[in-house]
Image 1 (tube, one colour):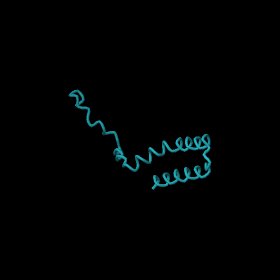
Image 2: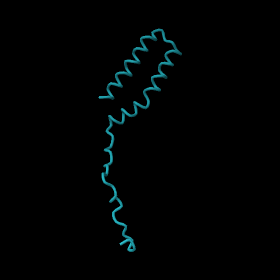
Image 3: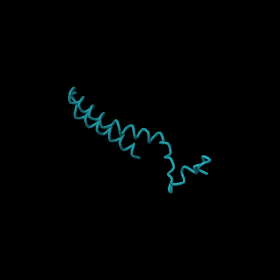
Image 4: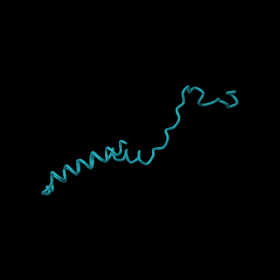
Length: 77
């Protein structure tokens, strides 16, 4: 059989084959994107608030943290 070029099934040695993962849905894709971007974006916004120092910067800071928290809660389900 080997001389004829038939090497048999290439997957014969695999005992427990795993199936491919299903594609990521849109909400999951946004959650992955947000997880990658949110930390750096939050730092940039806080630095911008400290640099520009608007008259109501504590309110802005609380608003930004609440907004980020809301998006985080929404992406976690």
